[in-house]
Length: 318
Length: 318
Image 1 (cartoon, chains in turn red, orange):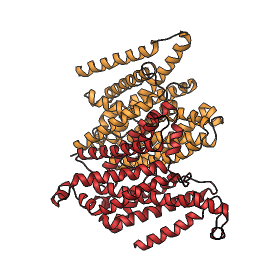
Image 2: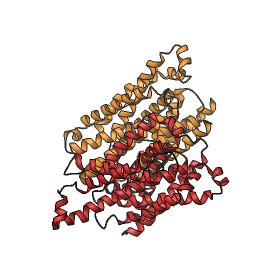
Image 3: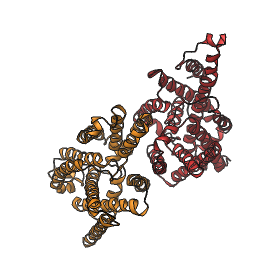
Image 4: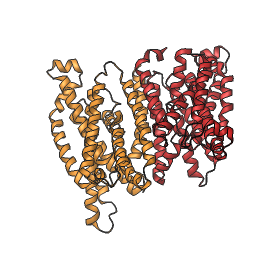
């Protein structure tokens, strides 16, 4: 697949995304300066599109880096507890400070996402039997344990339904003023691109990387920070989007291989395309209402993941 | 053998202490009011404890592993899906909830149906390794979880509180009428289960040996799996899901008691489960005075134990 084809698809889908919604807005309305419609366009539609682009590209790249560093095709923020740790961090910040502001939530969520991912990498280090299937299995369980802590506190405080509704991945509530945090992930993504070659080498194993003169620990930690930054910003603004960081990098690596310098642009654009498709579907199916994006992503994503599991075991072992 | 006997006696003594503590500790005011209610809860805990222990041990013998349990394989998520669907589409005042028998029957039927589909897949387990099966189960679980979350967020908060009681295993609100039916169903199942206990010992030798020794292996496997699902489905419909409970008690029993005999193993697991449930409920209610249900805590402890087991298994596999 060519990159420009993907970009073309992304641009076309972006247009569709801008002009779908409960209120009909056409290009001529914007040109004619129809005040109400221009306002809706600027306050709701455009921010939504930007949020989708940032979240889609960010989560896919986070997944790609994770897979490279853990040397396992099935590790991603969903299957390594990163998102669950970020969730737990938000909950704890709410418990500690009765009027938790944005800053506190960001700091706690980031710290937990980082610590949670680091802990998972430590567990991975301990086990010798690094089967492609086995590692994500532990990761999902690890995420479930973190979630059960969240559930425990939420149940005590009777805010279970509340918590679920904030953290459900959805672009419904995105408006200008509510998504700008996502821009924090832009430097992280740029850093990921600058470090691409180093991640590729680190993905060949610690000994090999050191032999080539790479400071393995430094690269590893940089990668973890990038993953935590992206995950935190996405969880806080959009919510949890499952499987995205898992399947997009895998599809790209199927046709492009594992050289990160080459695959990062493809992964980012394909992530945007995938998320746009899922979001548009969610908006069309029960128009004028919406299905949150986490549901459409979960349905499509789990189908793709199961196919990969059944068909691609041979591929994943490579 | 003597060591086993002493250990079982110790467990029995401990479980009696737990039961007595729970039955008589700090009864204030109306003894006539509190005592029968406490006895009802104890009966529910003992009954479900034994049912889950039996089902887990025989299921693990049949599938030749010590990590998978029917609960983890998705029976519990199925229960949550059914209850959420009922609350979402019919509401808590509808006949599907108000009529306890109907609700019970629907839940049991749905879980049995799911179990049958699952076992058809499991029977190809010789083709696919057990970890892959587990991962597939969890991916399906993530998918169902996302769908259910979406519906739960839309449910009216008051209705949700009522649903929440059903989503987590809960001994505080066991229905008297359901106790009677469940006791009858479980008694019949136990009667059959008791009859085939010796055959199970032979079946743990593996398929070829068992057939050589005159067991109709494939038919027995089907019977035992159905028996296990009846036990799990009934106990889950009675008190709600306690996902990791069977895993903990079965494995404690394997580690603590040295025998291949199912009668002894199941007795050990049952005693462990009475101690864990009645003792745990005592701690939650009287010592920590928590809001939370016991099952949230059991899931947390069970999840950690699960990771420990999986890590141990992976070392052994080398």
